[in-house]
Figure 1 (cartoon, rainbow, N blue to C red):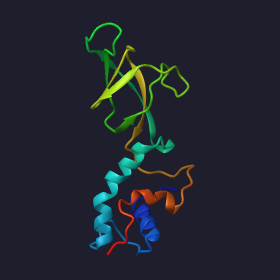
Figure 2 (figure 1 turned 180 degrees about the vertical axis):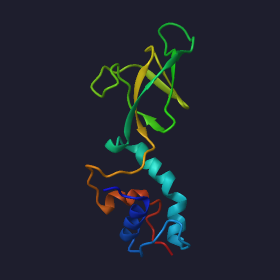
Figure 3 (figure 1 turned 180 degrees about the horizontal axis):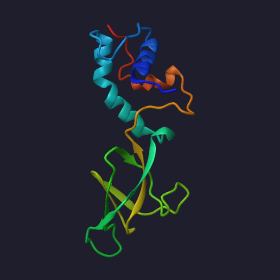
Figure 4 (figure 1 turned 120 degrees about the vertical axis):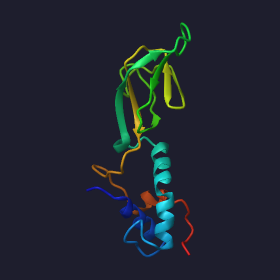
Length: 149
């Protein structure tokens, strides 16, 4: 079962004891506010935690930045849907040996030659496969906990 943005919006409205909406495009204050804040708030919540449904990996080719020996001289471009990379490891898996790296804008620099497997939190749609979440769990997706008036 997939939870839609409208489902999440109505869960937040239920917690606020407000009437549900029929669409995020509906011309009522609640829908306008939800439509305005939903995507940025969702991305912010995705960035805070390593949600299982949002973790992806990509094999990324690198290029030598020419910054010298014993430095983070290999540059890797992050995937377009990357909200934030997860800690890097030699195998690309969570149990691998951690490697040195830093992030600057849309690039990751490492001392490891490419290609490099980067695990990251993706800006992916909310899915609920294998996930249980109550309406209070989705409460964080509402930017203001005050009543809508």
